[in-house]
Length: 325
Image (cartoon, rainbow, N blue to C red; front, side, top):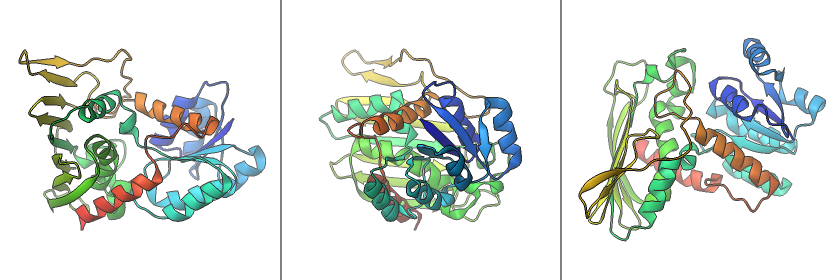
């Protein structure tokens, strides 16, 4: 299979690294920045092009992975689908082109796969499974935060999409985490938020949110999202009369409280957590690989349905719009 990776920034290079070495896949890169193309050629041995039309004419690719800035996704997805490619796209953050691209994918019988990395983490999968097996109503308190300049220490936050109000850092956190939250605790019935700008950062959007969420099945949560906290944090407490779990965002920090014996038990996983230097401790590589495998599995057999899709994401983006309003 011939796969093109569009956008050779940090995420595009991650996708190439995770797919590299597979004998059943031939990779090509696309980026308008020559320096990025040169780096990818040197580091991964991947041939690069400057446009989709150029690589389509030369290589006739079967699939595309879109790792560009979110506001560019809709047009790129459409072009790839029109050229009969299956499409994997990073999170979009905005609903631009959703209806049109879903229609085109269906007409051309192409896979349209949307990244939702936290649904492929062993820790969140375990929380989802245990929550869905619990009969009592549950509450959760979940805080995700990291100071915005620390997201990509190698570049200014004003130089990529998190500086844009439409695709801002808080919105990205919500778009990353709400899919697994609703999968675990149920569809959102009501949501409200208190938000403000607490920093002197050069951004034109709120940098912190305290959100209350009521789920349709009676579960409730408090979600704190920010780009303010100087020590990066990802911590959730889930509790009910017969159930309690906590997680600090890392592969070795998931625990369940043994109510009968009144002790906290760590839940461990056999597969090691792969971490890339420069990212926060809770950013691990394994789920990025898992979702790429899920994309390839769906191409192989359409019955292999993904953990997330554009229809579900459209509803989450509506909720985020309501939170930001």
